[in-house]
Every structure is written in structure tokens, then in C-alpha cells.
Image (cartoon, rainbow, N blue to C red; front, side, top):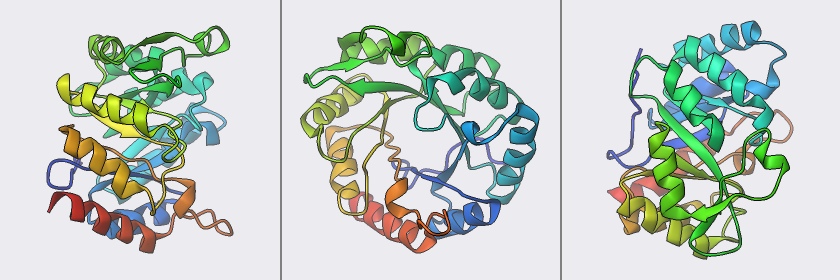
Length: 246
């Protein structure tokens, strides 16, 4: 199975949630393989059940599996690491403090591991206190460069900026994109991203010089009745991304 991500034009990799193995397969095909399918660890009661189910997703999508926390829940950090050790997926979502543990259990370097940081309301700074204990205390506000360098120290691949709330934190996000470009780091915007704002959000990062951008588009393209991510809207997403890089 494929270990490395299948980026569109070596720049963009879509990240959406999959409600079932069949839904994952449909979305994978709709994105022409330039996608990773999020499956949330929080949805499973134990590791064994999660591993058995996630293996099915891997088989259906050539290992385009993203192990998720579940709304950034820091209490899922250790479970995500345990699952990553067994599954060796293409993508792992982690809170800031969980990045090193996840990287340590991976047997190859291709897996992308993000580290979650939050907006602070202050341009040039992020909150890195997103772990199980740190998130319960005062914010850990550091400069963008410090956050990126710390993530690199821990073996992280990208910085996950959550919650974006669409375009609410756009000035902070632009500064982050510039910092990622300057420090040769990948960027994963997430939270409130939809078909109306995703092109602008991704284009900002690409124009800033970010090498790899992984936008997370979740609830906006999920059918509320079935819980499935709509494959036809994944196709729309892909076309929007192609406009940026082709």
C-alpha cells in the first residue's frame, strides 16, 4: 500500500471525513486520489475495534487514511499514537504535545503528522497549549517561528491551525502561511472551511510559498441526513484546487 501522500501537483492534499468504507472509496475516487480520509479515533470504544475498522479504510483507499482525534479532543492523543503504531497511515492528527510520541512509533518518514495550534487573536502568535493537561491551563502563547521549530524538533510535518472559523482569523492565518514558507513547513487550515472560502484560504498559503497545503473540509460537505461526505462536492473541491495549481 502507498505510504506517501498523493499531492495534487505536489502541493495540495484534500482532507475530508469518511462516514463509512464505501463513503471513503467514493470520495477517494472523486478526488482522483489526491485526498486523505479522516476516521476519528473518538468514534471507537477501544483500540482493537478502531484498528480492525481502519484497516478496511486503508484497503479501500490505498492507505489514504488520516487518523483523527475528534474535534481536536486532546484526550484522544494517546489513542491516536497507539493506532498509528499499528496502522502506519499516511496522515496523523495530533495535539501539539502528542507529536513526538506519534513520530516515535512510525517505521517510516512518509507519514504526515500535524501538530494542533490555536489562534490567539494576535497576529504572529499561536497557542500551543492544546494537550490533555496544557489545554486546561493558561494559554501557551509563542511566536509562529517558535511553534514551527518546536514541531520540527518533535518530528512534526505540518502545523494544524484550528479553529480557523472560515475567514475570521484571516490576518493571523496569512502571517502563519508566511512563517511556514520561511521555515519550510507544511500548513493544515481547518475549522469552518467550505466550498465558498476554501479557494481563498488555500491560495493564500500557496501564494505565500507554502510547499504543501492540506485543507480540512468537514461539516460543510457532509450530508446531514446520512452523515456521508458528498462525493460530488469533493469533485467540486478538486476542481477548485486545480484552478490554483494548474
